[in-house]
Each structure stands twice: as C-alpha cells, then as structure tokens.
Length: 250
Image (cartoon, rainbow, N blue to C red; front, side):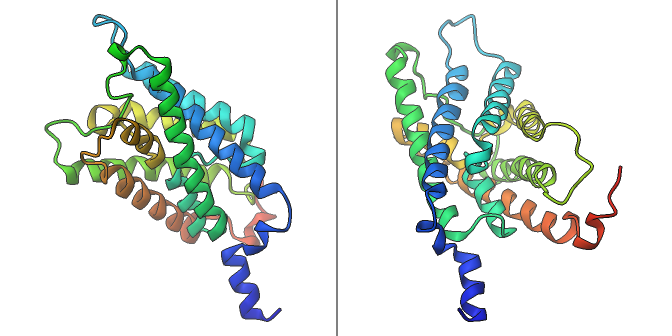
C-alpha cells in the first residue's frame, strides 16, 4: 500500500467495516446509549402536576448522571459519544475515522428518535407536552441562542478531550464523572437560555416525533461549531506532546 493510500485509510477508516465486529458492537452501544439518554433525560422534563414542575437542578442532574453512568457502561465499546457534536469534535482531532463518525451520527439520531417515541408511548397524552424538546427563550434572538449553544458545547467537548487524552498521566479521578459534571454545569447555566441541548441528536428525537422544527437549526449549528472549535483548539494548543509525555509527573 502506498504512502498516500495509507494516509487516506487512516483518515477514512474503511478497514473498520471488515476487520472485525468491533464497529457493529460500537454502533449498537451508541444507539442504546442515545436511546436511554433521551428517554431518561427528557422524561425528567415532563410535568405531571401543575404544581410540581421539574426544577433546573433536577433536569441538570438527570442529564449529567445518565451520561456519566452510560460512559461507565459502554465507554469501552464505543467511547460513549451519544452526541453528534462529540463525534465530530473527535473526528477533527483524528480520534474517530470518517466512516465511523458518519455511522455514529446516524445511529445516534435513530436512538434519539426511538427514545423520544418510547417516551411518548409511556406517557399519558395529557402530560406529553413537547416531549422535552429544546427551544430558545422567547426573548432570545436566534443568533444569541446559537452562540450560547456553541459555547456550552465547547465546554463539554473541551472537557472530554482533556480527560480522555491518553498521553496524560496526571488524571487520578473518574473521566465519566468529570464529563457528567460538565454536562450538569452546562444545563444549570443553559436551560433558561436555550434548554441546553448541547447535543443535536437529543434535540432531533423530540423534533421528529412531535414534528416541531421551529429554530431547530440552532441545535445542530451551535453544538457542531462549538465541538469543532473545542477539538481544534485542544489538538493544536493543549494536547500533550510526545516529548512531554514521559516527563509528566504531578
């Protein structure tokens, strides 16, 4: 194989389709993970009593905890992206090949749709509302919502790159916990602004099931831009260089 062909293969990852069953196991993990994320996270948002509206803290903890626990359960299989913005952020750093990235995004969206559909089936019609769909605050301009989603997703992906950097030897705690706490922090700040999606698939599921596409572009463009910027900044500025790997001792 020529040098150019090897370079193309390292970028595209075509061999992953035939080399082993790992990719198919990973796709199953991403589907199940996104399904559970949407079902449980969005289920927390639904209000069954007029006087018992879910608090921002409860919603934030639900999303943070479900992602942290899923990362423990399926992180070794697929990396537990369960988020197209995370997948694309890892793609630009070279940690996820093109074919794997495309397939991940497809199954993440399918998992989100299935999770939202299951939530609708399991919830009495009077309490379904919009199935936890995200929407900007009424007084927020679309550009403001886009910016906030981008910044929040930047934080999430920046933390993911930091705690998952294989060359770091100073991390003593739990990477899934750190990621879950980052999601909780994003939601605590962002729910009142945009609903704090920070995940295109999470917004896509309820939008499909309820056929509500108002300002939906925000929840793709914002998180994807934020994730891409986070990946590029971490790769070219903060990633541990090879010559520092052996000298790190904190």
